[in-house]
Length: 218
Image (cartoon, rainbow, N blue to C red):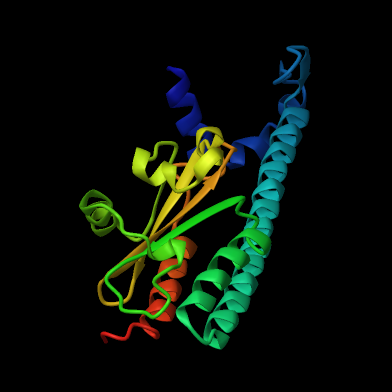
């Protein structure tokens, strides 16, 4: 009889533990951490405590995620209200950059908009971009995060560019691609490839709808 047979027998015959309760109390097994011999019942209690500890940690993690999502949702709401109140494209672009920096704690924000007709052509956000950048924005999904950035995009950040270590590319879309937001940080872990992009995608949709309101060609 091998160990698997013993385990299977005990699982199929739970009455064994009642019939031989006294003998079970005499069984000692190694402690999971220091190796000393402890009663089987104590070992079972330790295993139960470990499971409870893992469950508590998971619960705290879920609560933390819920609180974080609530906080982000509130920030998105404030941004939406501010964008709705904007009276022109210049105000839209200011609101986006200001709220991302001040409310979302994004250290560096660069925005470029193209393919729209607006009166405020002197805005830096409306400076021409290359066909490569436009193709990049078209090819990005809802959003993309990582530690690499094309030189042309990095140049948008001026002197701060060489010190930035992580980036989020957020296309500005409303039916079509109207521009691109690049969020950046000196922290290499701020925008990492595996992070969720749901709220970044919603940010791009909000920005697209706000920009499209002041597109004279539509």
